[in-house]
Image (cartoon, rainbow over all chains, first blue to last red; front, side, top):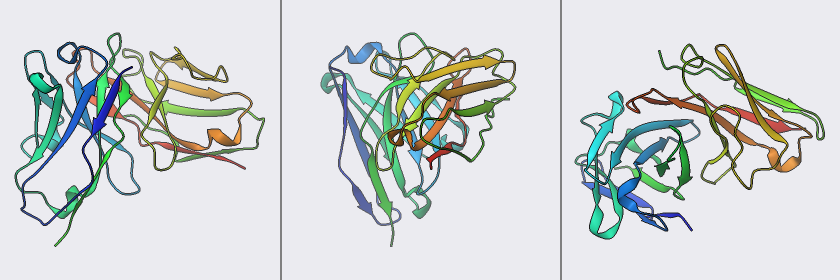
Length: 119
Length: 108
């Protein structure tokens, strides 16, 4: 059974570095793209970026390029989303998603990680 | 461009048919996919490649495409279908991915 299990909620002050994780199981981690989707409070879904764990090729949505870093550790089947200096505007729920094999969509979603950035 | 436009809200009575549209210039060239998100939950794909239904999704969910518009149709709407629905597509290279703004389906 495919599962994406995300790390728990985070509360950070602006400027404190932050990394959230997404552990995959039930499939070959290196064969599927894994992405991240943001949902700000009361708002819609926004695609942030995606990584192919097989070779670490990464693509970012333009608004998020340079603002976050996506990485993956093949040895533990885990993808990461990282901020070096989070801002209050990064407060949101973040979902990791698996890109489907046969189409450019997302067939499995993590449960979401709530991030709060506040002074 | 890869912008997708959805109506903010759709309301229907139980048992009626709900139709949620998604419009965009890229839709004649790219497949669209639909996600259902209930409050406090992660989204779930309900239709992929315009009209394919994943296993486990009720038959009352269907999708269609015509020109620059794709439509998610829910026949015989049930109270449990009340949720936000999002369309999504990506370009052929998987470089640009976009979601529509979402439609809140209210079952009256």
